[in-house]
Image (spheres, rainbow, N blue to C red):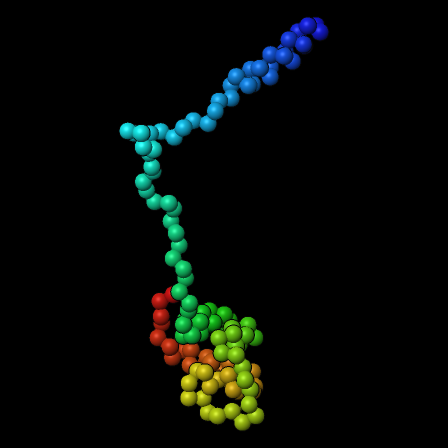
Length: 119
């Protein structure tokens, strides 16, 4: 029994070393290595930054008259409340309105007028 175990202990590592081979050289044609031609994988194009109009339209997907929608609008145009806000002539003027409800109504009014843009 001891002789069998000893024989296995000697032969097993020898069999393992016999099975390992040196790394194979890459295949060649005419002494030149073959190269693989093809796509290296699909690379994604860098995303173009969204315009302010597209960001405002994305805010339209959030429930109306909610704080989340106002936060979305405020992320596009940071609020800069003034005591006497001028009448809003453009969407960027809505950031000057102090009251949150009025500011949300102002943003909604302009965002609803924007024609649907591709996303």
